[in-house]
Image (cartoon, rainbow, N blue to C red; front, side, top):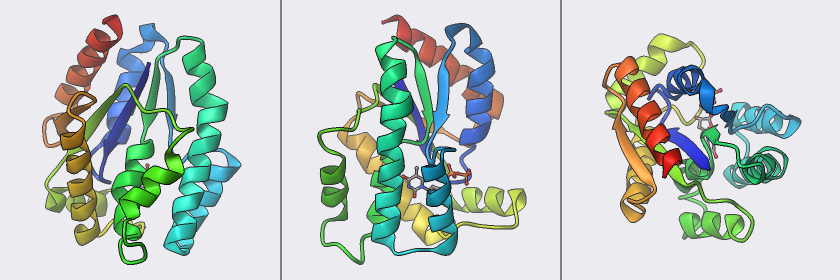
Length: 199
Ligand code: TYD
């Protein structure tokens, strides 16, 4: 079973993942992330930092995803494991639809096309949502260096894309209010995952 956690920067995904890795320890989940920590993931981070061409950046994220599927996701799923990924293909659909918008007439269609045929669609996706002003505040409190995505206008378009994806696929998405207390979010998502894996 493949579960993904998504949301704009500043929604507290990392805290949630840390929480789940403890509370769901008995389910022995494989906890993973995109960008990965492999050499390809490192090139993705370098590409983000250097603000390379948006098409090149989108293809690097997608290359990292392909390797992630082959090396981590598919083997774990074939052994029947529970996989939880901090970001996954919906991050591309939400973020790169924005960064590619000025370059391609149909960025989302292009992103869909380059994933089609080999990606694995998650069974369930928890989408953390937050008013963009609150996300920006958390980001400026948390760190001094910001990535080029971390601007209010970009994040608000990214979040709209996430919400559109959730609207298109309400069976897969569960929307979570990231302004709730972190413990509350953690216990809700953990319980929801337990129910989901039992089905
Ligand atoms: P993030 O998970 O925030 O890493 P970190 O917490 O280490 O900074 O991911 C880095 C950035 O990359 C984040 O702003 C979201 C963006 N991103 C995309 O634009 N597309 C993608 O496909 C992925 C996986 C991430």
